[in-house]
Length: 186
Image 1 (cartoon, helix red, strand yellow):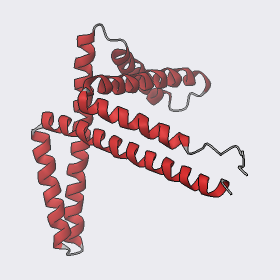
Image 2 (cartoon, one colour):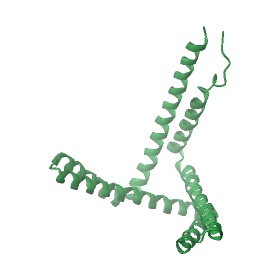
Image 3 (cartoon, rainbow, N blue to C red):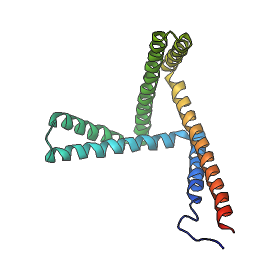
Image 4 (tube, one colour):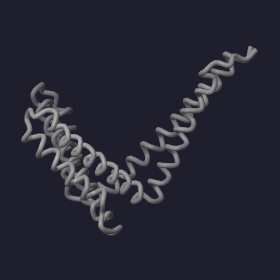
């Protein structure tokens, strides 16, 4: 006798999600620019709406109004600049600018992690940890000097993460389906 509970087809959600992730990863491998442009546009929309909300919020709460005004105006300005390009070529330039900025933020974060790892290792006299930090600093310096290599690498990293996440999600859904069959088929 089969139970027809609310969750009898819950296994389908991770499978559908996994298939979508695999398709996105394939698109990242084949044609990354449209997806990167969409991500940049989404960030711009987020900044635009957030800036508008901050400016409207000034009407209700005037504490720290200077920071809110500057943050809201900057969000509206930068968000509108990204969301409303004059042409397709301008969107490509904006995508490249924002993506390279994010890459530099990521790289300087890696540089910071490397330096703190060196100091942490030297502080506790763990020279292998300090060596790992030194290698992290060298890698960050190499990537900072080759930002185009970094951008390509970043897209490939996201594509692989998305692919493996999709495969894992499909696997979880299939395992849940098998468990459901074992539970409800008696």
